[in-house]
Image (cartoon, rainbow, N blue to C red; front, side):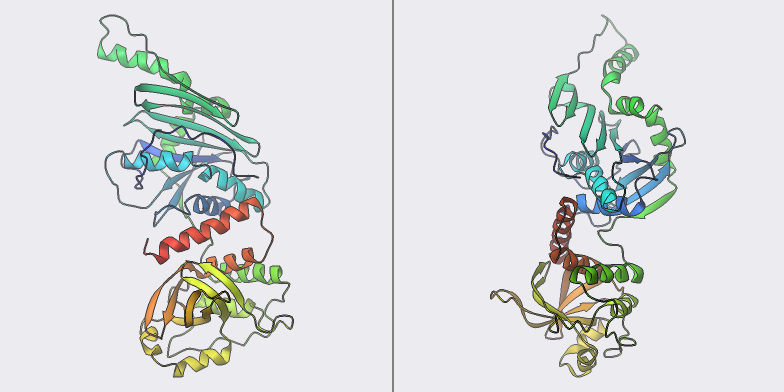
Length: 407
């Protein structure tokens, strides 16, 4: 699916806040069929959409929707402390109005995982500041209905790839109306324009009530990752890289990686060693040239067993070992003259996920990508990419850049 649908972003300017869920009545939810949208598509899709956002701990809270048969909801949270003001709604509105929004990226990920043709719905909702924004997304495009507080009063709109209509909502108030009568008149005027009204018609159920119930009682939490952590995920990423490079799984692999300066290899690295092709006769140098992801720039070569053992004699490596860093690759300058300093080492942290660039055995800085993200970047860099994969590699590079800068 082509994620780059042409449409006009009609949100008011100045939306730049990041914290989520300042008030209980402000939320953003994706509504989906679990049979069509697996957890991996949710996690990766949101991660791709958030690639360039400085959000440290995004996560999803999953809840069934008993009143909406066959559907569930994923409520997004940035994981950041509440920021006050309208920051929560600002962030949610801008994120879901982006060209590569979470629903678009989730549909792309689902299609790549063998679930094409799905339809998802989304609602960004707040009662503190009137905002009721509903969407339907599918491979052919989107439809959006919303009502919100604008600069000149309440406005309502309908958007699709070929149209964008925004009108001011007129409220017919009887003379001498009480406050209660004014509220009732306002509700009658805006109800047909609400995103939640649109979604109720689409799904044949009162969606807002079901979402409110799920928002306050989610069933489980799902972490948002571009690439999942853990040894099993690393083994899958190496198998993917081997397929792209037409290599054999585990060829020439040592029995087990050795400790280096008393630091045991993380379980993820042991999984990598077992799965990687260490003896490809078609590529004996095994060099990955012209890399540029976070602080990993230049030419990379994964260390062989003898080179790992040699780190017991590497000058200055005691400082890296004291930080429980385990060396996994050598990084040298680009063949074009730029890139990393000569003889930098890429090391893996004790968590088996975070990568560090170590220079001179003493100076260690965050590399940017995680171990799994680096492997996915390598496989995407040596393959023909779909539109969804182009979005993914872009998100990998953006996220790595933010981390390497301390974001």
